[in-house]
Length: 93
Image 1 (tube, rainbow, N blue to C red):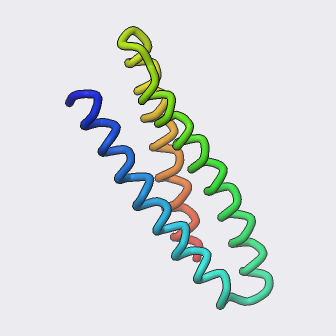
Image 2: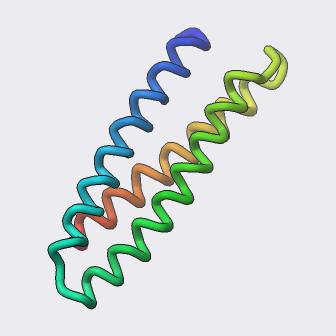
């Protein structure tokens, strides 16, 4: 897969995760106070992970060909971590 295709694919994943985080935020508004507080904490962590992933995507766009593989590997790790965190939070609520 070429560089632009990977960037486009990851951008699409970020957009999906944004939508899932928005869904969790909507659920939090209708939850009990305790659940709401827990969800807000988890959503904050998800947003931090999303910001990290977006930063890595920006780095990927700007990286030289020599740094391409290292940046791509970091992006993949961030992607996996964010996806797993989202699944975990969704499964709890």
